Image (tube, rainbow, N blue to C red; front, side, top):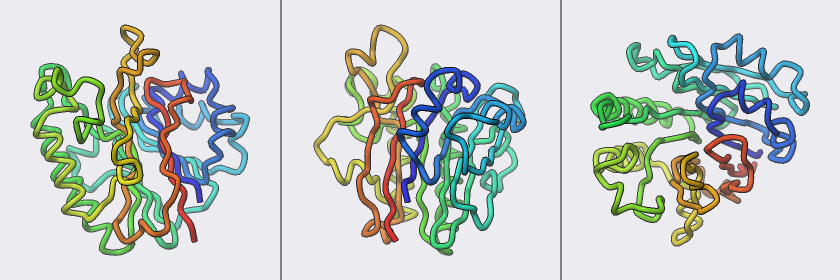
Length: 258
Protein backbone atom coordinates (compact mmCIF):
# COMPACT_ATOMS: atom_id res chain seq x y z
CA UNK A 1 0.00 0.00 0.00
CA UNK A 2 1.55 3.30 -1.09
CA UNK A 3 0.80 6.21 1.23
CA UNK A 4 1.46 9.76 0.05
CA UNK A 5 1.23 13.20 1.67
CA UNK A 6 1.21 16.55 -0.13
CA UNK A 7 0.61 20.14 0.91
CA UNK A 8 -0.93 21.37 -2.34
CA UNK A 9 -1.17 25.07 -1.34
CA UNK A 10 -4.63 25.37 -2.87
CA UNK A 11 -6.48 22.45 -4.47
CA UNK A 12 -8.18 24.69 -7.04
CA UNK A 13 -4.83 26.09 -8.10
CA UNK A 14 -2.95 22.80 -8.33
CA UNK A 15 -5.55 21.03 -10.48
CA UNK A 16 -4.86 23.67 -13.15
CA UNK A 17 -1.23 22.56 -13.22
CA UNK A 18 0.03 18.97 -13.64
CA UNK A 19 -1.91 17.42 -10.77
CA UNK A 20 -3.55 14.73 -12.94
CA UNK A 21 -0.19 13.60 -14.28
CA UNK A 22 1.41 13.78 -10.83
CA UNK A 23 -1.40 11.70 -9.33
CA UNK A 24 -0.85 9.00 -11.95
CA UNK A 25 2.92 9.13 -11.41
CA UNK A 26 2.67 8.87 -7.63
CA UNK A 27 -0.07 6.21 -7.87
CA UNK A 28 -1.01 6.41 -4.19
CA UNK A 29 -3.39 3.98 -2.57
CA UNK A 30 -4.05 6.67 0.04
CA UNK A 31 -3.21 10.35 -0.45
CA UNK A 32 -3.37 12.88 2.36
CA UNK A 33 -3.65 16.50 1.23
CA UNK A 34 -3.09 19.64 3.24
CA UNK A 35 -3.83 23.34 2.71
CA UNK A 36 -6.66 22.72 0.26
CA UNK A 37 -7.84 26.32 0.80
CA UNK A 38 -11.40 25.39 -0.16
CA UNK A 39 -14.73 24.40 1.34
CA UNK A 40 -15.78 20.76 1.11
CA UNK A 41 -18.01 21.32 -1.92
CA UNK A 42 -15.23 23.26 -3.66
CA UNK A 43 -12.76 20.43 -3.05
CA UNK A 44 -15.26 17.99 -4.55
CA UNK A 45 -15.84 20.27 -7.52
CA UNK A 46 -12.11 20.80 -8.14
CA UNK A 47 -11.43 17.05 -8.23
CA UNK A 48 -14.67 15.95 -9.92
CA UNK A 49 -13.93 14.18 -13.17
CA UNK A 50 -10.20 14.77 -12.77
CA UNK A 51 -8.17 12.54 -15.06
CA UNK A 52 -6.55 9.95 -12.81
CA UNK A 53 -9.14 10.35 -10.05
CA UNK A 54 -10.98 7.19 -11.12
CA UNK A 55 -11.19 4.61 -8.35
CA UNK A 56 -10.60 7.08 -5.52
CA UNK A 57 -13.03 8.08 -2.82
CA UNK A 58 -12.71 11.65 -1.56
CA UNK A 59 -13.10 12.94 2.00
CA UNK A 60 -12.37 16.49 3.10
CA UNK A 61 -12.40 18.79 6.10
CA UNK A 62 -12.57 22.51 5.53
CA UNK A 63 -12.01 25.52 7.75
CA UNK A 64 -14.84 27.80 8.84
CA UNK A 65 -12.83 30.63 7.27
CA UNK A 66 -13.19 30.36 3.50
CA UNK A 67 -10.09 29.85 1.36
CA UNK A 68 -7.96 28.87 4.35
CA UNK A 69 -6.24 25.72 5.62
CA UNK A 70 -8.19 22.48 5.04
CA UNK A 71 -7.29 18.81 4.59
CA UNK A 72 -8.50 15.98 2.37
CA UNK A 73 -7.95 12.28 1.71
CA UNK A 74 -8.15 10.46 -1.60
CA UNK A 75 -8.23 6.70 -1.13
CA UNK A 76 -8.61 3.61 -3.29
CA UNK A 77 -9.32 1.51 -0.19
CA UNK A 78 -12.62 2.17 1.53
CA UNK A 79 -12.01 3.22 5.15
CA UNK A 80 -13.87 1.68 8.05
CA UNK A 81 -14.57 5.22 9.24
CA UNK A 82 -13.49 8.81 8.62
CA UNK A 83 -13.34 11.57 11.22
CA UNK A 84 -12.39 15.24 11.07
CA UNK A 85 -10.75 17.11 13.92
CA UNK A 86 -9.20 16.10 17.22
CA UNK A 87 -12.24 16.74 19.40
CA UNK A 88 -11.20 20.17 20.68
CA UNK A 89 -13.71 22.66 19.22
CA UNK A 90 -11.58 25.81 19.11
CA UNK A 91 -8.70 23.86 17.55
CA UNK A 92 -10.95 22.14 15.01
CA UNK A 93 -12.30 25.27 13.32
CA UNK A 94 -9.53 25.31 10.71
CA UNK A 95 -10.01 21.83 9.22
CA UNK A 96 -6.47 20.76 10.05
CA UNK A 97 -6.92 17.05 10.78
CA UNK A 98 -8.64 14.26 8.88
CA UNK A 99 -8.40 10.61 9.90
CA UNK A 100 -9.26 7.49 7.93
CA UNK A 101 -9.42 4.24 9.89
CA UNK A 102 -8.39 1.13 7.99
CA UNK A 103 -8.40 -2.49 9.10
CA UNK A 104 -5.06 -2.46 10.88
CA UNK A 105 -3.99 1.18 11.13
CA UNK A 106 -5.16 4.78 11.37
CA UNK A 107 -4.12 7.20 8.61
CA UNK A 108 -4.03 10.83 9.75
CA UNK A 109 -3.35 13.80 7.50
CA UNK A 110 -2.51 17.00 9.38
CA UNK A 111 -1.76 20.60 8.55
CA UNK A 112 -0.10 21.90 11.72
CA UNK A 113 -0.66 25.60 12.46
CA UNK A 114 2.08 27.99 11.39
CA UNK A 115 3.34 30.23 14.18
CA UNK A 116 2.96 33.15 11.75
CA UNK A 117 4.98 36.34 11.32
CA UNK A 118 6.57 37.71 14.49
CA UNK A 119 5.60 34.34 16.06
CA UNK A 120 2.24 35.83 17.02
CA UNK A 121 0.50 32.43 16.78
CA UNK A 122 3.17 30.52 18.68
CA UNK A 123 1.00 30.16 21.84
CA UNK A 124 -1.82 28.68 19.72
CA UNK A 125 0.71 26.41 18.06
CA UNK A 126 2.07 25.24 21.40
CA UNK A 127 -1.42 24.39 22.64
CA UNK A 128 -2.03 22.56 19.37
CA UNK A 129 1.15 20.50 19.75
CA UNK A 130 0.14 19.31 23.22
CA UNK A 131 -3.45 18.46 22.33
CA UNK A 132 -2.54 16.81 19.03
CA UNK A 133 -0.01 14.59 20.81
CA UNK A 134 -2.73 13.55 23.26
CA UNK A 135 -5.08 12.79 20.38
CA UNK A 136 -2.53 10.59 18.60
CA UNK A 137 -1.57 8.84 21.83
CA UNK A 138 -5.17 7.79 22.39
CA UNK A 139 -5.56 6.63 18.78
CA UNK A 140 -2.36 4.62 18.93
CA UNK A 141 -3.73 2.58 21.81
CA UNK A 142 -6.41 1.10 19.54
CA UNK A 143 -4.22 0.38 16.49
CA UNK A 144 -0.97 1.73 15.00
CA UNK A 145 -0.98 5.06 13.22
CA UNK A 146 0.64 6.69 10.24
CA UNK A 147 0.51 10.44 10.64
CA UNK A 148 1.48 12.45 7.60
CA UNK A 149 1.46 16.06 6.61
CA UNK A 150 2.94 19.51 6.87
CA UNK A 151 4.06 19.72 10.49
CA UNK A 152 5.42 23.24 9.97
CA UNK A 153 8.67 22.53 11.79
CA UNK A 154 12.21 21.60 10.81
CA UNK A 155 13.18 19.17 13.57
CA UNK A 156 16.97 19.21 13.28
CA UNK A 157 19.58 21.63 11.84
CA UNK A 158 20.01 19.28 8.87
CA UNK A 159 16.33 19.80 8.03
CA UNK A 160 16.76 23.35 6.75
CA UNK A 161 19.34 25.10 4.62
CA UNK A 162 20.12 27.97 6.99
CA UNK A 163 19.57 26.85 10.58
CA UNK A 164 21.67 29.48 12.32
CA UNK A 165 19.97 32.40 10.59
CA UNK A 166 16.47 31.08 11.38
CA UNK A 167 16.79 29.63 14.88
CA UNK A 168 14.27 31.18 17.31
CA UNK A 169 13.49 33.89 14.76
CA UNK A 170 11.52 32.21 12.00
CA UNK A 171 8.25 30.27 12.31
CA UNK A 172 9.01 26.58 11.98
CA UNK A 173 12.41 26.65 13.65
CA UNK A 174 11.95 27.86 17.20
CA UNK A 175 12.98 25.74 20.15
CA UNK A 176 9.34 25.58 21.28
CA UNK A 177 8.30 24.04 17.95
CA UNK A 178 11.25 21.67 17.86
CA UNK A 179 10.41 20.54 21.39
CA UNK A 180 6.80 20.07 20.33
CA UNK A 181 7.77 17.56 17.66
CA UNK A 182 10.24 15.82 19.98
CA UNK A 183 7.46 15.45 22.54
CA UNK A 184 5.08 14.10 19.89
CA UNK A 185 7.54 11.42 18.79
CA UNK A 186 8.41 10.36 22.32
CA UNK A 187 4.97 10.67 23.93
CA UNK A 188 3.12 8.70 21.26
CA UNK A 189 5.94 6.38 20.23
CA UNK A 190 6.40 7.54 16.65
CA UNK A 191 9.27 7.34 14.18
CA UNK A 192 10.21 9.96 11.59
CA UNK A 193 10.44 7.44 8.75
CA UNK A 194 12.48 9.45 6.26
CA UNK A 195 15.09 10.72 8.71
CA UNK A 196 15.50 7.27 10.24
CA UNK A 197 16.22 5.82 6.80
CA UNK A 198 18.46 8.76 5.77
CA UNK A 199 20.18 9.95 8.97
CA UNK A 200 22.78 12.12 7.24
CA UNK A 201 21.05 13.04 4.00
CA UNK A 202 19.87 16.53 3.14
CA UNK A 203 16.34 16.52 1.80
CA UNK A 204 13.82 19.36 1.70
CA UNK A 205 10.07 19.38 1.02
CA UNK A 206 9.32 23.13 1.01
CA UNK A 207 10.95 26.09 -0.69
CA UNK A 208 9.97 29.74 -0.58
CA UNK A 209 8.69 31.20 -3.83
CA UNK A 210 11.09 34.09 -3.28
CA UNK A 211 14.62 34.49 -4.54
CA UNK A 212 14.77 31.31 -6.61
CA UNK A 213 14.93 29.22 -3.44
CA UNK A 214 13.87 25.99 -5.11
CA UNK A 215 16.38 26.34 -7.94
CA UNK A 216 19.11 26.98 -5.35
CA UNK A 217 17.71 24.24 -3.05
CA UNK A 218 17.45 26.64 -0.12
CA UNK A 219 14.66 24.70 1.54
CA UNK A 220 13.14 23.18 4.64
CA UNK A 221 11.92 19.67 5.46
CA UNK A 222 8.46 20.40 6.85
CA UNK A 223 6.54 17.41 5.51
CA UNK A 224 6.69 14.09 7.34
CA UNK A 225 5.55 10.50 7.37
CA UNK A 226 5.45 9.49 11.03
CA UNK A 227 4.73 5.90 12.00
CA UNK A 228 3.98 4.06 15.20
CA UNK A 229 7.24 2.40 16.20
CA UNK A 230 5.67 -1.06 16.09
CA UNK A 231 4.61 -0.55 12.47
CA UNK A 232 8.14 0.23 11.26
CA UNK A 233 9.03 -3.37 10.24
CA UNK A 234 6.23 -3.19 7.64
CA UNK A 235 7.39 0.09 6.08
CA UNK A 236 9.86 0.77 3.27
CA UNK A 237 10.90 3.36 0.71
CA UNK A 238 10.36 6.65 2.54
CA UNK A 239 10.72 9.18 -0.27
CA UNK A 240 10.76 12.94 -0.77
CA UNK A 241 9.54 13.62 -4.31
CA UNK A 242 11.43 16.86 -4.86
CA UNK A 243 11.15 16.50 -8.64
CA UNK A 244 7.37 17.02 -8.48
CA UNK A 245 6.30 20.66 -8.64
CA UNK A 246 2.87 22.30 -8.64
CA UNK A 247 3.11 23.60 -5.07
CA UNK A 248 5.76 25.21 -2.88
CA UNK A 249 5.78 21.82 -1.10
CA UNK A 250 6.57 18.51 -2.75
CA UNK A 251 4.94 15.16 -1.92
CA UNK A 252 6.43 12.63 0.49
CA UNK A 253 5.57 8.93 0.58
CA UNK A 254 6.05 5.56 2.24
CA UNK A 255 5.14 1.96 1.33
CA UNK A 256 3.25 -0.21 3.83
CA UNK A 257 3.56 -3.96 3.41
CA UNK A 258 1.07 -6.61 4.49
